[in-house]
Length: 420
Image (tube, rainbow, N blue to C red):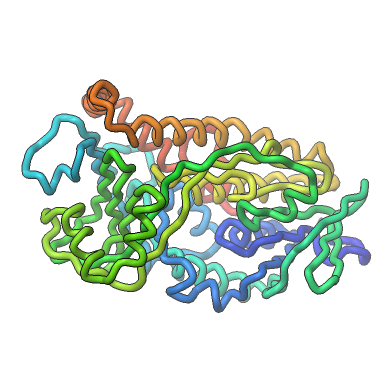
């Protein structure tokens, strides 16, 4: 494979060194291309406990990608296996009321017999550990990183993309990837519009220590104000994602710790014993945002720059990781064939590969939000009956588990656990 011409600073410039962007850089490097990462935040700041308080549910197929990129040693100690997922519909978390409800779904990893031996439904990893592992791998691979540095614009010609930084430096490559989040400067410079809407909801995120073992079970309660998730972490802790109206979420974030703890205990219930809040409380406004196109001449979009979805099913980061695997495979294969990796012909392969899955999943998440953040008695009855019906049909349960595990459809090689 031939390298870039002397006129280029890299084969691929990636704006955004977050989890999707860094994963893409490692995959491209493994495939023989030379990426360059640019991010406004230094790696050291991204791994601080106060930078990102969230934990992410990683689909088992997405975790295969990280294993194939040599990240298992860094991630395994911090990865909590999800063995079961219990989804409950109720006015309050069912486990705290003492009153059983027939409206629930239970997913068990033991039911998926055709996955790789020993794989769970997924993994829960705190984002700070993921960022630290990716940063160490990027540095060990010798990938060039400019941080802190901010992309403020791009220029596109038939043969190259030029990235303009805030300090007026100019860098060029056959392709630039916008992976710097919902406010992507690369996407704006490429003239790619977005569609979407806010949900008037905010996710309140906190980490708690549990008195009783969580046994790798993730709980998702659909309540009138929005979903309330209890996500198991290592060391018998849990990440809570508590969806509330924006006003109530702000009140919770600014409340004294004892007041927040009292509200949390009423919401949480007693089924896992006493709980203790550890670390700060974070809030994240929730909305849907989809780019009108995922690629154009000399540009591709990845992660939240391409699609920002509600965290109701924990698929936001997984969509970005799927995109990284697909884009890396398309670019590496094109380079091996001697094609121009920034051409529209090549990039349309990536866009076509990811378009249907991303749009259908985003629409499904939007429908879920509207269906389950609703206290209408008739709607509650219909969705409850639907959940109970799916729970009784084994093939339906297994399909949803494969879909959540990222193992449905035409999988890139990295998501099958194969190196590029």
